[in-house]
Length: 215
View 1 (cartoon, rainbow, N blue to C red):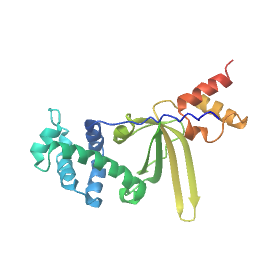
View 2 (tube, rainbow, N blue to C red; view 1 turned 90 degrees about the vertical axis):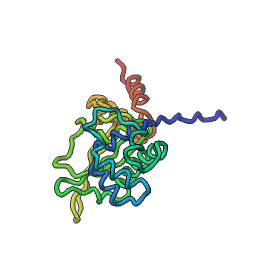
View 3 (cartoon, rainbow, N blue to C red; view 1 turned 60 degrees about the vertical axis):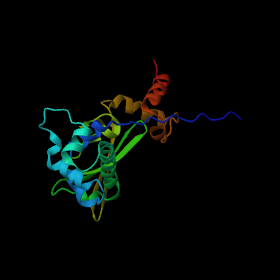
View 4 (cartoon, rainbow, N blue to C red; view 1 turned 45 degrees about the vertical axis):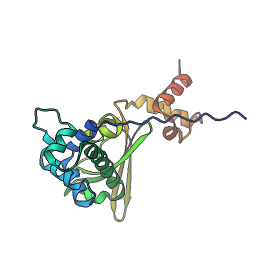
């Protein structure tokens, strides 16, 4: 039997400056990380947040300069700390989302995907985004290589303990109602299955849909 060709995974590999600016976009989350992490990077991350990530500085921030100004570690270790801190914030959103709770707003779980990268954020917002609306989250730039997403699905779970909202986001500005209608049609006709959204890239599905329904 012919050997099945394995799918080549596509992941974003952020630079340290991408991670730095993504962390700088959510200082509240950096504070929460400092309070709950207990890792070696906490004094540095707290110092950086107290300095507002040097947002008002006219000089390009370098790891060498951060090392010199903080006096807490060498540039190599600081680079490692920034990446580790960013990943730990994402992990906290997944494992202990309630520590990010705001005083008001509707609790919403955001499941984000772009190519083979995925993330889960829990946020309290005044409204629930609607299908095909665009959502900008600068914090996710280091994870996905972009900060603009569109809503591909919204699910409400209402029980005796309250309401839970789950929002699925996809990367880019590609939300297209007509394309989703064709996908649903292909599913209904048995030409695509419910796992295709998970297992295939959007570009692969688009190519199949155009082949199926080309006039």
